[in-house]
Amino acid sequence: MDFDKGIFQDIGYLQAVLMHSPSAILVLDKNTQILEVNPAMEKISSYSREELLDQRKWTELVLSEDRDGLKNMLRMLKADDGSRPEQLQCRFVDRKGNPKTVLLSGTYLPGTKHTILSLIDITEHKETEKKLEVDRSRAEASDRLKTAFLGNLSHEIRTPMNAIVGFASLLQMEELSEDKKSLYLTQIINGSTDLLNLIEKTIVLSRIDLGQIKINRRQFFVNKSLQELTVKYRQILADYGKEDIDLEFLAGTTDNDFVIQADRLRIMEVLNNLLENAVKFTTSGKITFGYAYVEEDQGDGRDSLLFYVKDTGPGIARDKTGIIFDRFVKLVDKNDTVLRGAGLGLAIARDLVELMGGDMWVESNPGEGSKFYFTLPLTFSKAREAEPVHGQARPTYDDWSGRVVLVAEDIETNYLYIKELLSPTRINILRARDGLEAVEIFEKHPEIEIVLMDILMPGLDGYEATQRIRSSRPDIPVLAQTAFTFEGEIQDGLYAGCFTDYIMKPFTRDMLLAGIKKHLVRTT
Ligand code: ADP
Image (cartoon, rainbow, N blue to C red; front, side, top):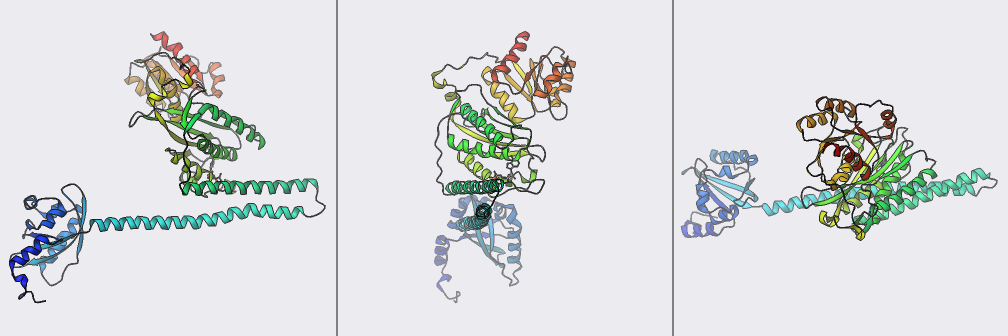
């Protein structure tokens, strides 16, 4: 097209094009200061023409990461050596703070040394592109998962099926001893149970994926339901010949009518999965489970329950504590054997907890047992919780507001439990996470009236910490929280002269408050 002779020679036409062009136009002087803009530039940037002309430099509006590219483009345009720079994508933040992406092209006018830049807004296009990219990688991930799922499923089905079909055909053989028959039958029963378990778990998982699991919150009597689990798992331990393993339930409140609005079925399903694993992986020692009431100090004030299942099993390597919640993940034990199970229990447990608004995680180290935790946000506020349960009058507690206790406890759940037990008394709690911190806090706070000291703590233990505390205030009451193994030692006088008294773990609210009261009154 011959522009020299065309109608664009007419300034009126040119002006009309500039005024109505959807592309933004910027004219920059030789120092890249803005000389002129068209209305589309005002629209894209949300700045008025006057504000833009006041801007010292267009380059300063551009995000720092994109500035070098822009400067380079301007330099190439000015070089005017016939090499037209490529269109450039660059980003800036408009006057309202919205990020914008534009496609820039330009031309240099040697006579005036001005540069004309044209900008096309591609922000929406970029966002769609990003969304498509996310959708694509999600679809790919889901595809990979499905393939892995089917691969695993076929393996998990074949294993028990092999046992069922194989031993069933062996049973058909004549002249089998009663022992053999019984062995084969056990294999068939085990295989069938595993298969059923796998089918049930797969159904739950696909229902979770399809969004078919609804959370039904009804009255859930926490202590009563968890006590039922204690009975059930003591029996299971006995069935597996593991009656030497101690199973203990630690209630977060002594109030047996403690009731919350929650989905009992789902919570029990999660706890069952965790307890099944604890029983399966633990060969000696102890399984402890329970919950603590956690008061939410910030946000919407929604309190929560922190459930836990601890065992003295083989533990889990640090780098594996994340993946064990993935589907079909099973770790090998130290003898390189994989125990029975499809690797779906924890995946289901975590999905269910998340559906109920909570989180799930594990703390573990090889050889040190495992501690599985999950939170359950409560659907009522503190005010509602304070209402009498079942019309019964809530027990009354001493009001210790203004009094100060130092609690030295390194384990988070234990501390949460103590905090919950103490909360109705309104006593002011200072917390130390180890012995050294206990001494430091104690020295900074002369208002501390009593100390609750855990014995086993990292660094400085409770015994040494107490001795240091006593060196500055010999008469401060220090109550040791002690596990069973230490009781004899305390009575033998090993700690005589160190602690004022001790409270045996596990303790109830009544035990803890009585222990504190006994020594706190003395100081009033
Ligand atoms: P499954 O349904 O087969 O029991 P899970 O998803 O519950 O599978 O557990 C996955 C893997 O996590 C187990 O195979 C085991 O390697 C590890 N694991 C789970 N719980 C424990 C535990 N309490 N102690 C040690 N390892 C555990």
